[in-house]
Length: 207
Image 1: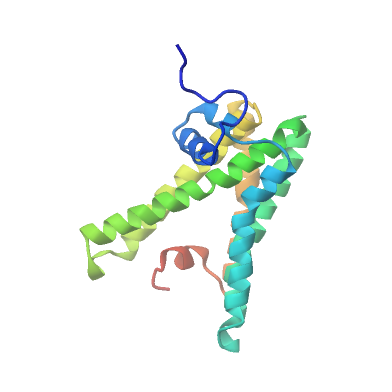
Image 2: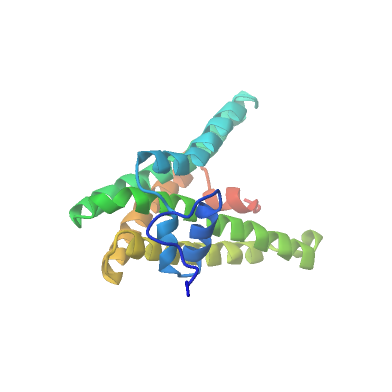
């Protein structure tokens, strides 16, 4: 009797990636087998972020020049943060002698990175339905963002532990190393012109 779990190779069909994200997002380690190793799979996972950055840059040139710098910043920051995390994770995987596992881990990490955002969007939609209009406060939206961030940290830790076959402590170090540079970058962007605030931009909060 089969268990219905993915085998050592990704399942056939277009549902392999969603299945892998669903399994890993629920703490099921077999989800990692839904992702293929190699540069092709990694580039495919990176493609949506690149596409959004290209679209954002193009749209930035459609707005008045006074808003162009903010538009360009908003467009390229997600891609820069993603590339920064990939570089950090590759260097750490090399330190742990896990280079051979890195491409599949990175592919899984990129696809799973969309899950907290999707959950946040759904939660916002439900909140607006339950509390329509102005009843939804900035504090409530910020609470959702905080919850999504906690889940993101856990998911980063878990995918690292499963994908690179590390201990919990090693996965914790990877999570910290990936999170700290992004946090510093966003803090600097908030301090310096055009004073880009990623949280306000993501949630549409009042500045």
